[in-house]
Length: 398
Image (tube, rainbow, N blue to C red):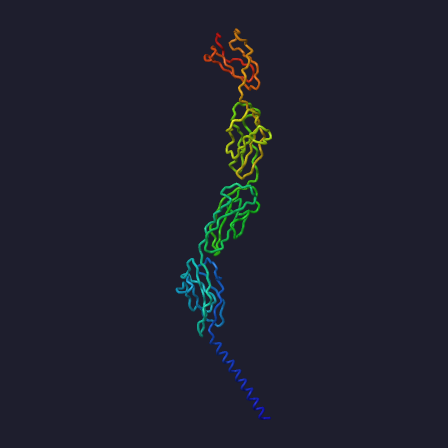
């Protein structure tokens, strides 16, 4: 029994000694471990940044008491732009001003070290330094100063060329040139078009800017446009007077100028021998003045005409009230003279002459002379009635 106890005590002591040796060995070997690879945090891989002295950040490595950092524009790190050795235990590094990076693409990595040796480099990450703002976008619609009849217009622009993509754009629309309280603000959008919210009729100022993926915001493109949804008023016809009879087969037609916010105003004209204008003989559009001379001769008939206005925003007004004129180019019959009688003798030096009316005549012209060829001492008068009294005294004679 005593022998058995001795054997058991020896075995327990041996086991305890082995455990102590194992723990001691483990502690010894742990103290000899070289640090592992750091895990990079920021700038993120393939990130675009506008800071040319960026802060480089990574996760701490257990057992590390120093770090080395390299930044190079070559993936093989053959000539690093930044080569910071033994920067201490901090898990980040700010590129120094004297090592400020020019715009371009860079590779970076980090390794940890301690008294047991130097660990492996981390994986290589890439970032781009871009300190240049994008150019101002070119607005393609609406045109500068354009008048629009759409209360929710589409704003479009051209893409800008930029290294740090994607590029975002922002649209502001305001009825004040200082853009102090925009009617519309798109926010930053990845698009080349923006449909405005509802805009009241007014003059508006438009601004578009670009921002690259590095955060650089460029200059604005600016212009104005007008929202005008109101149609112009109907023109007032001026001449010829309604019902005028004329022998001029290519008469000039005139109307008043129409005022409107969206200038210039243009006009449409129709002339027809049907008061309903079912098939106009003259149908012209886009007239820039308030008159038009008919270019092709009109047949003898009663003609009707009217005009409407169209503003620069595309709003079309109502037709004016119509007028008519009578085209009559046929020669009139000679009037039959009634007084004084042929060969009569009178002592009235300013006699009154009478004649029979001629159908369709609007006026009459009278001539009086001392010779039958009407070449000497010619007196001329005009009348819209069938009589005329000379205003000039006649000398004695035939």
